[in-house]
Length: 471
Image (cartoon, rainbow, N blue to C red; front, side):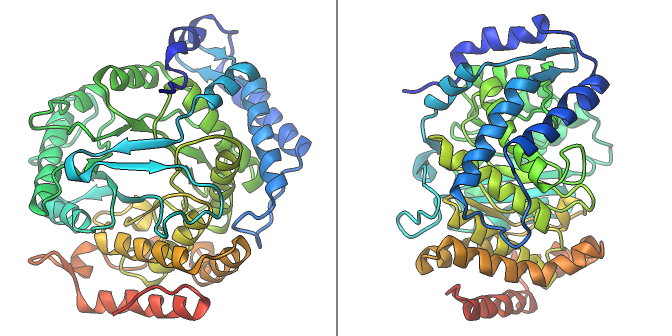
């Protein structure tokens, strides 16, 4: 069995205490940003809005080398100790050589194994994985119903049941307090009940709803809390930084035998720079997170910093290249691609166009797909299983069509032309109703008008060359 960087943790983590001293502001302005600009130029990484799905393999190879350079030359700052942790090219290559190329999660009849796919590889004719993304604030009275709407999506292999309560029994949820622990215990009970209700008790839950490790550990009891096949999350800070609490969380997960994931984040328009710079940053994060945490699952999450969007032409361009560069140049496990959450509210037509662009991008690049959340997880009760079902159906249709990268790119650009204008005008978050508007709360099924709205987009996708089914 290949074991990534785990056997090196004593060495790697100790560098947070022994590396050269550097203040955070100096790291951002004098180390990270100057190096990022120079490395992006050195490897000629350039943004091209008309090529959302990458087709230039040589450019992906350059992007991978740029990411290695960024990690080696900048290192990773630990803000707690104000020291830089450096890694060598040989150490990075050793980690890459030990990636297992697959992951296994869930338990019982819901145990799922997914093996890597190359770019433009449609495998057995279905997406390599389907991830439900249930993100953002959720009202306590419909918490169970929203979870149930996801659990009943048969194609879903795993779910980030990550809906956050806005309060617990009338009390604010404060990180590191008893209310955070109570909220986590109450939430996991609702999630497990929803999964049992549809006869899927072993469905993998990858949600992390709390901040403090004490709240996470409060539900690690296998009898009533986390299941054996469940997984969790451990992230670095943006722009190549890691805090001690992140390494502590990774150690706790490995000690308990809990698989966990990270995401390759980048923020076009912020300190990540433009889309080209951001693609280098996100790709470098895959290296950093595997060096420091030895994560089991990963994927891209680029977000437009100018108007918070995971699917804008800038963010999706960066995410697609981050995933493609890693997939092409490593033996990585199947990554999750596309948009993790959509910018428009779940009740708006553009929500489905964003979901389509995300699913097409992911599947064409050999990645798993995700979906379900709207309003960029920023507004309450904007999550639904119907959106995830739409993404899964589009993913299957892409496999059936066997699209080339050029064909996939053309259709993604057509989808973006429909929803990008309302992102540009900064209206997207306020468009479209929430779960109460879109669902029958008694039967937990989508309203007739909502089904028809999804079918309208399905029919248009058929005319574009995506043979997605519709009622």
